Length: 50
Image 1 (cartoon, rainbow, N blue to C red):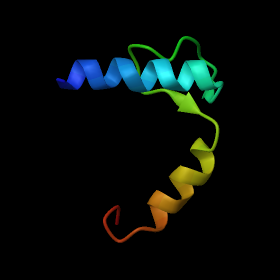
Image 2: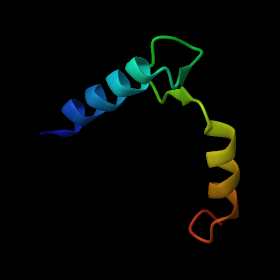
Image 3: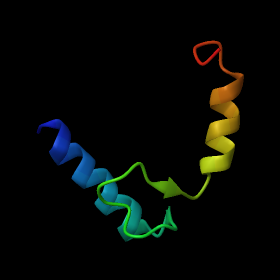
């Protein structure tokens, strides 16, 4: 499995599970998803991000 195959799988899973959020479809972009705001807040607090 290469990177593009993995991207397609993740995009499909986000869409199929209903976790993808506007803009649709999630394919071909960094997708918005349910919980994205919480994930961003946690990332901003991590030492790796700083």
